[in-house]
Each structure stands twice: as structure tokens, then as C-alpha cells.
Length: 207
Image 1 (cartoon, helix red, strand yellow):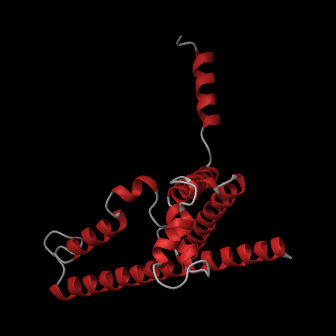
Image 2: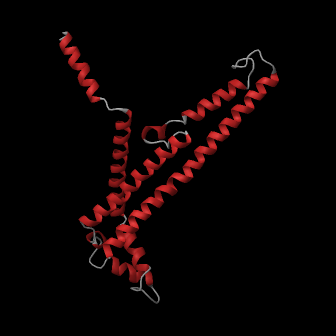
Image 3: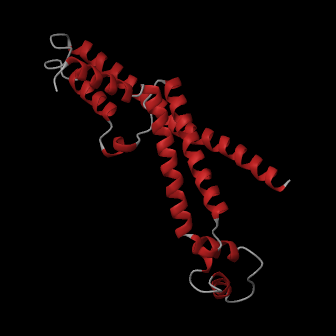
């Protein structure tokens, strides 16, 4: 079991099983987008009564007094499952692609802007459950710099240590400002791209 050939084959198999960082990131983006699409289908299906109620309440099908009662009579005309009976394969397909594509576009925008601005990406997956590591590192570095006795400026004058602290704080402010700007710009760009694509698809569908 410990022959060189078996060990070599095991190493080759492990190397082939590993993905490059770029391929791994692309696979994660597809995985997250697919999960978002499935989640959207489940949520939209479960909230069909609410969606139908909102559509009918904002239509000319109800009027006068007791509009809510009129609306409920229309929504549940054939029983409590009436709103769900209108969901078909086309609805499921549309919901899935609408949200999965939106998720993929957002991740692509986040990835591109993070690389352009040289800031961290939005936390995904397990990263959501742990503290922000970069912030912890900045805080730890600032704390060390603030203490000439224990930090990297040990033995230097108080004025030099204070200047180093100010520089570190300014760098942290710039990094936070860039990161905050990306958090605003990324969803705006993703939404604009999705709106253009969705509107074009709707126009082609009707015309």
C-alpha cells in the first residue's frame, strides 16, 4: 500500500481534483447564484396568496366598500389553493433565472470593483459567520502603533509614534471609504445591468 506508484497516483489525483483559484471562484459564483434562484422560487411560490392579493387590490376588479373582502373572494375563489394553481413551469423558470442571474451579475460587479479599488469583497458563505478579519488586523495594528512601549515604534519619540498612529488612521479611513463606496456602487451597477436585460426581454416578449 506504500509503493511509490500508489503514492504518485494519489498525488496526481489530488492535484487534478484541485481547481485553480480562478476556476474555484467561478464555481462558487455559479453555486451561489443557483442557490439564490432556488431560494427565490420557494419564497415566491409560498407568497403567491400575498402577491395575488396585492395585484387584485391595485386593479379595477375591486371597487366601492369592502374591497378587501372582494379581493379575498377573488383570490380564493376555488379554495385555499387557488393562488398556487396559477404557478406553472414558465413561472418557476422565470423566477429562477430572474434571481440567479441577478445574483451572478452582482457577484461579478463586486469582484470587478473590489479588484479595481483594491478592497475586500463582500463576505459570502462562511465569511458571514466570522468577524471581519481585515478590520481586526487594522484595529490590532493601530493599537500596537499607539503604544510606543510595545508596538513597532518602541524606543522612538512620542511625536513619531503619534504621527504613525495618524497615518494608520488615515489609511484605515481611506480603505473604509473605498469599501463603503463599492458597497453602494456594486448593487447600483448590477441593478442597472439587470434592468436593461429584463426590459429588453419583456419588450421582445410582447413585440
